[in-house]
Length: 169
Image (tube, rainbow, N blue to C red):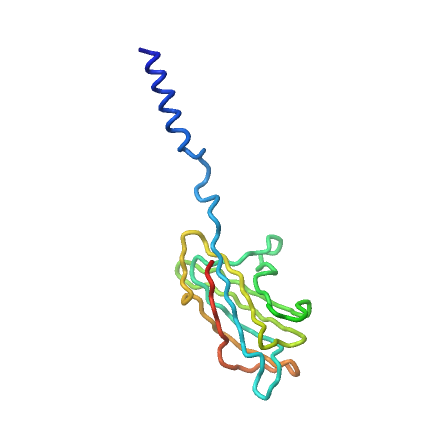
C-alpha cells in the first residue's frame, strides 16, 4: 500500500514539475516593444535659408519611456538621432525628459543644432521604449513647442509643424 502511494506521489511530481517553469519573475523574457518617431521638416526657411537648429517637444502617452544613461539619469545619447547627416559629429543636442504618469502625459523636449544645417532628406529619429502591457497608438504622440532657426543668424522663427510619423515595433 505504501509502495503504491509512493509510486503515485512520484508520478504526480513527474507530471506537475515540468510545467512549473522553475518559478522566477513573470515576464522576464518578454521583449520591450519599441516606438520610433520620425520628425522631418522641409529643410529650408522662407528666403531659402538653411535650417541650423530645431526645438521641439514630443508628447508621450503613459507607458512610453526613454532609455536613461545610468551614470547621469538623463536620456541616453542615442535617444535622439539625426539620420542622414553628412557629418553627425557636428551635431549638438540637448534633451529633457519628463516621464508620463497615469494622470499626466510625459514629454521629451530637445534642441538639435547642426553646424552644417539640416538637409531636406534628413530627419530626427527618436527611440522610445514601451512598457510591456501598454499599447499606445500612433495618434497618442503629439508635437508642440516647435521652432527652427536659420544657419546664418540663428534667429528663431516658427514654420508649419513638421511631419511626425510613429512606428511601433
